[in-house]
Image 1 (cartoon, each protein chain N blue to C red):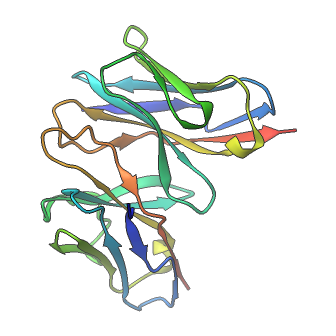
Image 2 (cartoon, rainbow over the protein chains, first blue to last red; image 1 turned 45 degrees about the vertical axis):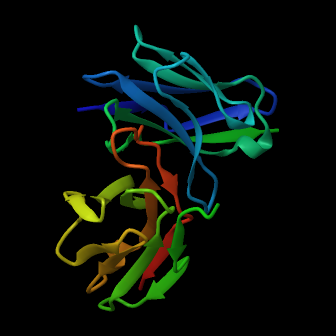
Length: 114
Length: 116
């Protein structure tokens, strides 16, 4: 079985500061890993995904995440926060081998302050 | 390309009434998922289908909930009778399915249900 743990249900940063959202995974097989973003009153949108190619994955809106097998982590970062980044972020994991459902974390609400 | 389409976007109903939520997945996607999102419980998987067949309905809260997928382009989630605790945003999502599927989901914009 696979699972993800997101550390911190709420994160607050100043505009222009580094964004770091933490995600640790547990999986008995090599995982696929995802970050989704949910803006208010909208569905979830894919930010980026790791599917066993490059360990540093670049996504939309300047976000990136690094797969670290030794730390079982897939933290999401952005060098400089913008007000428009305020949203809820979900980490998710699925198994390699295809045809499997995602398991989501509990989400991290990102607040960006002036 | 059209994404996942859900209707209605908003539904307000009274306790005891039947509610039907609808979803049209992305064409060519073989897997379809229904999620419920609340402040208290977060994002919960209710049921998912593969090739129109229900694979896992262990997340369906009780017998008042039922879901169908009569064909590859349409699914419904029905609540009968509805209760105030069913108030939530219900999301439909689809994915490619099959051996090359990474599990990446494409979400609709959700149906916000309020049961008075």
